[in-house]
Length: 351
Image (tube, rainbow, N blue to C red; front, side, top):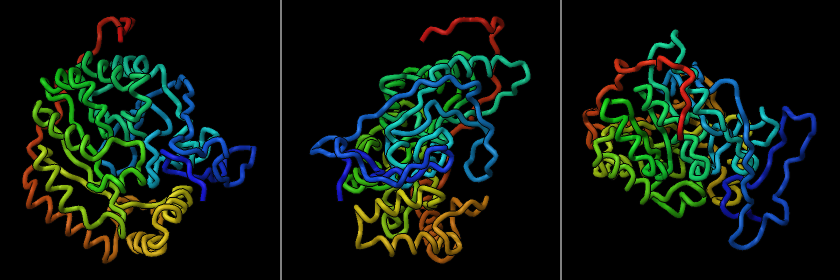
């Protein structure tokens, strides 16, 4: 099979929302060469809103911000792939190579936090796509958002797989002085060879662990998210990931079990066929056993943690790891008492 280097997805499933039907297709020939991958296309967009109300009870946040739509990290299992067809793109290669950049994100957040009706509540960056994906090194949208949070003294959380977060240590330190920031670093595996196939443009495991250590040393509350746990691939690593993250300074851990909703099933099944063909059916069957016989799951309160014997073993293993290596959550609660609106909502932001 032909292979696009540096990408998790190798196909573009049809976009069900487009008027133009596109066959599920292999990579274009020009995308395939030794040491080369499809270059990302950045599309500047100017949305009308930036803060989202989170309705799911499973994700531990009430509000979120996504600075980008689509994600260059290319994680083959990413549930957010299913959002890309709404914009006329495929959940496959398009999701990780056609990135919408929300150029007015900081201005929108500034206006949102200036609203006299808003009551301070933590707003989490990411949740749909990674706020520190490679595009951030060029566009600095996430950094501009952090500065707005700091100006308003408003609490925020960050979820990322990328050590690029350390670039913004100055703003994070400023926020942390007033207990206004929590950071979650996601680690799927400690096997960097597997990481390079499964989530090809994320930071290496070594860099992520170093990021945890540096953030913790600076006193910034940092957690680890063991996610997703994929039965038949990485469930045996749960104890060790929690142990190592604890040694690096993480004080809390969470986990999710993979679910393959919509086009993610097509993308991930193709990834298995190309990367782990001998394990494909076993892995898919194990995933299905965690979700009532289906690889996808949309049920609140069940979809993230799974059900059945395999899911129970994973939950027990995770609970044992946390009790042994992170017995108490030492993170201070995010502070909502310092939030203040600007008296002059027309103030210009200098980033």
